[in-house]
Amino acid sequence: MEQRVPPPSIEQRAETLLCLSPEEVAGLQEGINFFRNKSTGRDYIFYKDKGCLRACKNLCKHQGGLFIRDIEDLDGRSVKCTKHNWRLDVSTMRYINPPGSFCQDELVVEMDEDNGLLLLELNPPNPWDAEPRDPEELAFGEVQVTYLTHACMDLKLGDKRMVFDPWLTGPAFARGWWLLHEPPADWLERLCRADLVYISHMHSDHLSYPTLRKLAERRPDIPIYVGNTERPVFWHLPQSGVQLTNINVVPFGTWQQVDKNLRFMILMDGVHPEMDTCIIVEYKGHKILNTVDCTRPNGGRLPTKVALMMSDFAGGASGFPMTFSGGKFTEEWKAQFIRAERRKLLHYKARLVRELQPRIFCPFAGYFVEAHPSDRYIKDTNTKNDPSELNDLIKKSSEVVTWTPRPGAMLDLGRMLKDPTDSECITEPPGGAKVYKDTWDFGPYLEILNAAVGDSVFQHPAWIEEYFTWAGFKDYNLVVRMIETDEDFSPLPGGYDYLVDFLDLSFPKERPSREHPYEEIRSRVDVMRHVVKNGLLWDDLYIGFQTRLRRDPDIYHHLFWNHFQIKLPLTPPNWQSFLTRCEGLGPEPSPARPPAGLGSTAAGAPSDSLGHLH
Image (tube, rainbow, N blue to C red; front, side, top):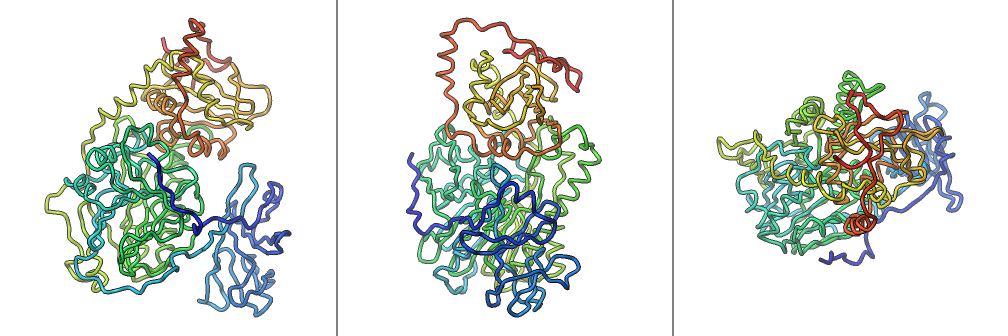
């Protein structure tokens, strides 16, 4: 199926304003740093705080004056304009003199593959200002927003219906995430009658192939819209077996006209522009902003005073630190880290809502549970934010109305905008309607994963070199030990246990003598082999909690994980060709023994062999 991409002539793009070498990045001081792009003569300011960087143009918003250090600022956070002495606190990007005046437009800071730095600006920065429309009065019932589950909303917009991110059945991230809420019984009918579906990004709690398979059986031509990300959202569609024939890839930052009253615009994420997006839907001049999972949606520039804003809030969508062990990763450290990170997320979301001042705010896109019994440890450890905590923070210093819906609850936007106290603004689901799931149909999905375990590919130890050569990651000083495990992450008797040296993409019998960082990755055999066989991204392993990791030293290898989570080839390995070559080579050699020093593990169970399963 050909995916249609409209002409990108007016597409919003990320423009590079400044490049810093790895040496220049390493030389950045804590606090304020001034830089000039010598080729353009334009000036920029960086603020460094414990490794975190913020940046802006060295250009006062008043009359374009140049900033210099503010010698009266003893904390080293503010700069002063040479024209009229306006002062900017670079740590917050707020002007402190005159107070309450402006916020400085922040730029996107992105690290490159060599630990250099790119300073980016999304251009145009506020594309929703093109062709502005004044809000018209909405009739009661004209715009209705119904929550289904997780990040899935069903929007009635006049005589059109739009659905966001339908994950409504089955797991996400292999077998790691399951729906917390029971979607309404008529979810498939609702989905089938949609006029268009927006899918924000390729993560399987938003792009759910089990859900889309049921949809495609009834409406294969339903119009689906995604952003023009570097890695296509539907990159895996040809291998998925899901027959969808009307996928539309649209440029960023351009209005897509649905009818005379309805249009929408997809925006990129400033931190993950290669894969993440958010959306503005506008009906009769009223904007609905859905930032979904974006870390920094549109580089931090978003429309203010929209009618309705939706955002994630929960946290817990990462394998870190629950799946790590060794060194500092004690249970106490993990618990403290998780509490602190969840709190930071709550305060960030509350601050964002207070700054944007939407009329109504809805926290969503965080309702998943690690439901499989084998993931009980993750479920108990991976605590998530409560939406009521976020709502309370928002209400402390704003008049924003908050709405935390149950599955099937419906908000009448016209009524809410006219009178938030109207008891008919929100229609709750029928009495006795089930809110939380208490059973999940694990069987069919685990069977799919288990089918890969006995696949003929894995009867040939040469699959290891074939797979990692296909993956294409090398010239990086990192040695990884990969261990296939059972459900409890104990080495699988007869399973593969091997080393990969990514400096030269070799597979040594023991760790090299040179100085090198080292990671040990234990993976459940069913998920690992399913990922390998189908050429899938490692999100199923990492975000899905299907690994246990140790690293020495304790360093996050961004290039390695970014490659295997985002940048793997778009087409899977050619295993048929591999098997044909293997059959032509005759019988397999006897399995090799484990690398020296790798014969036992922390769990005390011996590794059986480097070769195929017995």
